[in-house]
Figure (cartoon, rainbow, N blue to C red):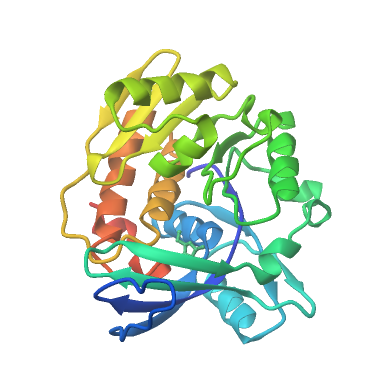
Length: 298
Ligand code: RIB
């Protein structure tokens, strides 16, 4: 049995429209099919891990509205432990407006709503019990992220931070972090180095290590992932697929990665597993609607 995984993060309802071209400022374009499906980086990562066999406790905050009720119902169906997920009064649930181009690329605007009401005081000590690994993102208040990470460090829980969407981070968050998983844009925002060459990747990796991060994993889209710690540097190629929608590919990657690590896999094995899961996800539309089940990866 794998160790319990704690995911603390956002939950959104995604409103997705396919489009041939992204609209320019002030422009209206007629799009294609519309899809409404559950999203939010926290929820996507929790669901991805659960579908791959992890035992997941998910802590989020939804609004007291129909989207919030649907989200809670969905989490129960996905076998997530949501005992510590709360409902915010008089705040709307999180919503994301997403356009997906024919290339599979997307543009996303999030109305955070109740996600920004997830405060440190909502995280009781019990939440952190029986947990070996925790996974966080940056779609909830930064003071909540900081509080949760410190709590995990104090309790020797291994924390993975997926710093999305990126924002400058306090040194105390990075120092002692078990693993950080930025993409290229996030790496540039956090280190000031654009990781567009092998030398720059190394420099960006070293910058994180110097700040006290124990393991660094930079996701490079089609190019795979770059892993680095004080003993090992390796690039693991991605699987080649025809992308339909890249939304939540990073979330599925992170959910799969933590599942493999909690199952005792090493970083390189975990990256191969996560690459496989993310590759399958990009061949399907939507966020949680694209996350694969374990039987699809065997
Ligand atoms: O990472 C994809 C997610 O970002 C979407 O599901 C959307 O809700 C936003 O949070």
